[in-house]
Length: 480
Image (tube, rainbow, N blue to C red):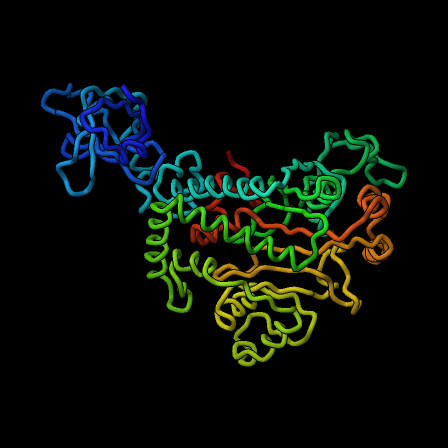
């Protein structure tokens, strides 16, 4: 007897063969038709029991949410809703589900908000929406590795605990094993971190980039794909305290080549998902359309989910300097009529999501790569241009979401890097190992960072980033 997944059986032509399936009951009607799902696909497998010859007590236990084992024969379905079904010969209840409790759970998702579902993370993945999102997330993760591995990049596991702040943001989670009620202190009353576990102040990382650079300058081309952390007290639909980052670093690569790599990478993973997650994406596209109907017209998406994905695939990314973008935004109607929340008045402004989306959706009508940003609004490690005021940075902007990728050509000149660190009060002794990479065969090199949850959010059309990660970590919330 073949034990198989629901996804495999639904595609099978092995009629009249015996199959063994285990899963959870999604519905049970007429005391005869069981809709069975095991998480392998959005679709359910119809299992038909002979209720006249089935124990009545057993039938009473076939409730929504119950885990069951089914053995039976694969036949062509008599109904129009499915191609195949299982004619049950043996059924076993593996785990009961109380019908009264089931009514109060997410197994009736129409009655619950997304916020409520997040409180039931151990169950929400059984809904169609979250099952689809998490299958897409899994496939995307595989596609990321496949892209880089097929191109001879080396996967590097960079530290989660670090003594450096790659972004210079200062919003980091501290790591310590000191007694917080009575920490050791210096004579001036400050905490004596020399007595801490690592002998210095340490934090959870915000990026693996700096460490990845050291490996790129030995292995040539590498990538990291791991968890990162921000202690930013921001309770919005765009922020998480724990999230995953994809960060390639490439030696002998300038900004133009970096932009080529980022565009090619994004198109590859989206093409992979369109090919391998067709049912889930169609369901999520329909879900987004239904959700949009309930919104005010001004807040509705101009494109449905599948159109948005194909929009990225079918268009070359337009490359525009920051300076040119600022002029476009300054002279735009929403800016002149003060419809932007953040009015663009002069060169040097830090662009917001509304500006980025305007450039993509209204002005250029294609994905956009902005480059050569003001040095004052970018990180210390980005290469300074000859004009002395801009750096070789780039951001990729997408419809509906704004920035999805941020990267740069790194500053390979030791003297310039030291000057920039001094200006920002970054102690050389903290990053001595990073500065050393500029002493032993320094070269032009570049890389970028892509927040994985931002990519999953774009690919699935989910409105809140908390709904594309299994267990969201946000201010005042660390359940599960």
